Figure (cartoon, rainbow over the protein chains, first blue to last red):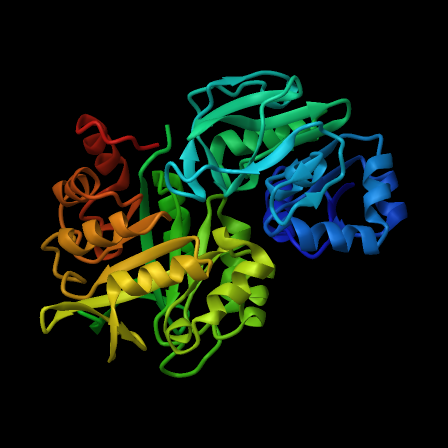
Length: 192
Length: 250
């Protein structure tokens, strides 16, 4: 069973549709026991950092997420919530990844919206994915580069398109909305 | 490199895709989900669904249709038409829409833009703006283009952006349905005046029109309906053509 975190942000339905298309059973839930026992956990992400973090804390989901040992994938805001701190409303986030999340400097259009390729990709999430493949991004804040970066995209500056630390994975782009390459990346995660 | 986007727009009325000329004279163009699937297979970068009668008839957008679309396609899509409150937006986002476009309701009550942006982030809010060149000014129209307002298109786009819109869907009513090309002057003016992506809409008739709007203005995306619905410009052919013009496309 693939658990998709239910919280006050995130387009859980799109993620669920994509995972189901790949033939997996899903549950959208905030139930501690279900999250703990699921084969994989996905934290979807459409929304704003501060209200999302407040919600996770109120429900005690922050500690649950940090304690998960199966593969966990944060998508977009879901990935940013796994980082250390977000400039978006000066929000303390979960701190699994060491990266800070910063607002794009206004040197080009913000949000970074649309299909973009990678400068580099590595790691199990990107098996059978090429740097020239395009994925769909839409975000105004970005995670800095660090040793946990597994994919780099350049927009205004090079930033973390994907992160990994232990069993925690994150993608800034939306694999569930990225046609073929997105499907491959989701499949790679689900097969971990 | 960030790619320029090609966006087929599906105008929806009573659950069917329709296409009008200059906001009138409606023709049937088929089942929206079937069309959506075809466009995904052809390489469309994004889809827009506009419930064109929602505001006029005071109907809520077709949540059930959104659910169907979301289960069938894996590229982003925007839904608009009849969204008056953040709660309306939430229902559509919960059903699987990626972005919400607001038009008339935001003209009547601009804080609607901020309310949705606060809840879901700016990237979720598309300000759709219908404009027509009248009395030496690009005026904003509301209610499906039927009512003129005293707003100037560029000023309204700037105000929308400062209220939290993440994108502007700019439709030239002068161009819409004519196939005479995008209205390059207003596309240029608005795309240079705001620091959020602008989607050019209204007037696409040839592949050259797309390369023109991308090379001569700062728009991030171009939207069209009938040239795609009726197969006049196949999307794969359009993208190959744009690549030969050095316009970055997926």
